[in-house]
Length: 207
Image (cartoon, rainbow, N blue to C red; front, side, top):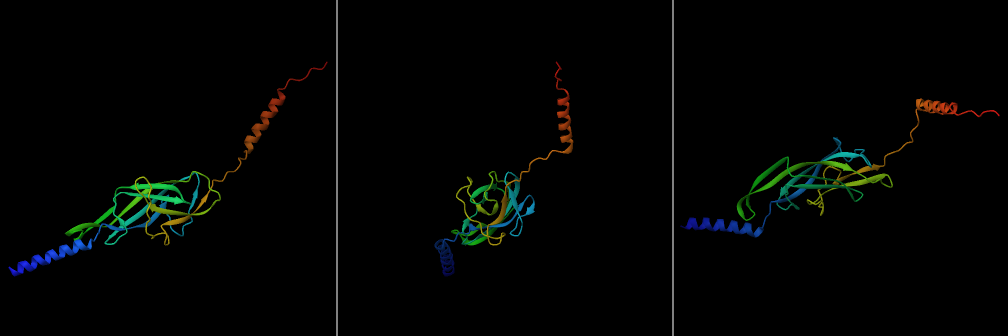
């Protein structure tokens, strides 16, 4: 009887202690693991140029790491946004994690055993298009942030890939326009046409 009482007291102490601690293992941190522009790695040292009016295929690889005192809740649906010079130029979403790993936690979340997401990652793809010409043409910082489903209320992503910043510097330029130079054949046809018109002019009669 005494052993049963001690065992019961021990279990109640552990349960009560866990409830008091209030540990939450469903939170963690999001990190930018990599990015590509038209299939080419977009890194801190890459010489990326975005030209206004041209569409680019951008893919971001983000990862989630669950931990006891993480900063952000796990969310299966990811909404990302890229801003250049404080203007949103890219928005993408994904509801399908490529890899998701769950772990069992003992004495977490008010129970003896509980599961939590320990890691997951997503590939989020979309088109990037800068519609308005920039002035001046210069190097700008392209920041990457997580948002809600309406692409508002953005939250930060931990730095990883881009040299300590969740983003990258890119050169933004406007398309160059050059005046069309007529080809020699075009000039020949134009001259022949003018000569023909001159020959067809009626001659004045002599009085």
